[in-house]
Image (tube, rainbow, N blue to C red; front, top):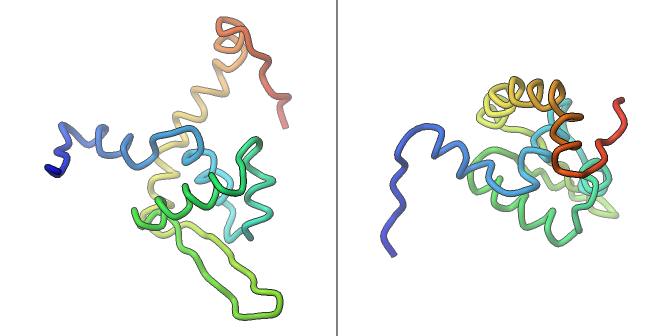
Length: 117
């Protein structure tokens, strides 16, 4: 299989955050380390299997760091790497745009926006 070539920086960034869950996981990790169960509860609608799969992809891309604490019971925490922090910062304007336009987007698509926090 021939390695993929990116046509621009946006192409590379979208490849790293592509899919439904990665940007939401990035956002859930923006305050600091989070245990796996808490992360699953923070990302509404994601299954345990999908969460683990996406976290592995993000770890391979060096966006998140996985730390295992050898305790009984074992504890695993995920946090953003420096690269992940920079990516999250780059997504902030996109999140602001989404907040500003969420109701109109939801109306056009026939979905109900989540209540604001």
